[in-house]
Length: 165
Image (cartoon, rainbow, N blue to C red; front, top):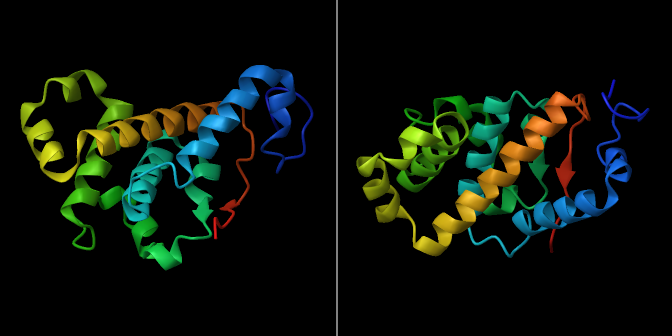
């Protein structure tokens, strides 16, 4: 049961009425991360998101899928092996670096800041623009996932993001 308000267990947006201005802004931020404004390849985006979902222990985030994912090569194997991002051979080097960034951004950001080896590998895989999109996306997922998990909102839901086509 939600820690704020009396919402149905699967109502993942009802809490926004408790803070309409900030909630509306957060919904806009989330919409940008999941739209074609985000320049990350979808496999990269979804793997980074899945890694954070596990780190946050957010069941809703773990169960979220993008309707456009299959057409972009995002299959259940990508999600099934998210916790093995460092070793599973099905990930590209770019995906692996994004997953490492996502994990460390959410769990060890101070050491990540000073890890010159990581930044050399990151810049070999991503432009500054893509690193900005990755960082902003990770910030949104960490914040939203922790909020949803902490407030016990939508933790039994399976969410499919609508197709943009």
